[in-house]
Length: 187
Ligand SMILES: Cc1cn([C@H]2C[C@H](O)[C@@H](COP(=O)(O)OP(=O)(O)O[C@H]3O[C@H](C)C(=O)[C@H](O)[C@H]3O)O2)c(=O)[nH]c1=O
Image (cartoon, rainbow, N blue to C red; front, side, top):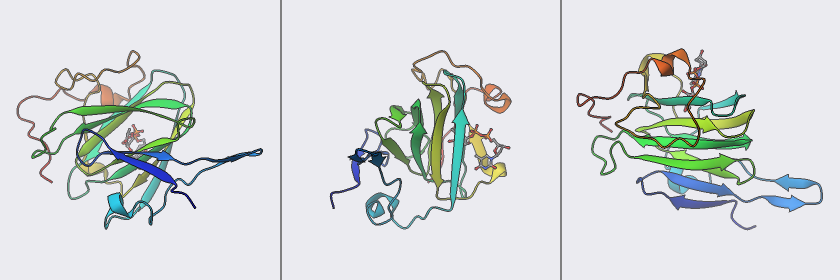
């Protein structure tokens, strides 16, 4: 059987795009969403401990940008199973040569693209089609006290969102902008 994922590293070390192989026939298509054997090279000794699902109704809505502090820092495998989103990750690893750099990737059910996001990155997305749905595979359990967040319109990040940012949760809208006191995560 041919490989089920095409894996490529991005310009942010440790962040990978994965394109699912769609097996298509007259009924439609079949794709594998996760495979510990084929993804062992990037999953390493991590395992999936939680799977979350979000549905976001209105185009231009933004969720995020979130992360968890160590020891609850998590790797996330994010896939879009309906619609289309502009997915954004920010490198928060203090020792990284790309500290505070961001990467944007269009994930859609159509392009079958996913992101593997290692520990030390913050994640958010903007909906580009209404009623878009994401699946997240997490390698660390949700731990609310360890949650951290960045404001999606933080000038220090200068994220180029494709549409005006709307529908932020109260928590996200109230995130303060980064200042020089933020030195990142020590991972
Ligand atoms: C993340 C999470 C949340 N929750 C509860 C907490 C709230 O009562 C409710 C909604 O949480 P929140 O508003 O933080 O959901 P999002 O804004 O979609 O957050 C997510 O969106 C960004 C883009 C992400 O990458 C994270 O996976 C996640 O933080 O679900 C849970 O019960 N378990 C969880 O793992």
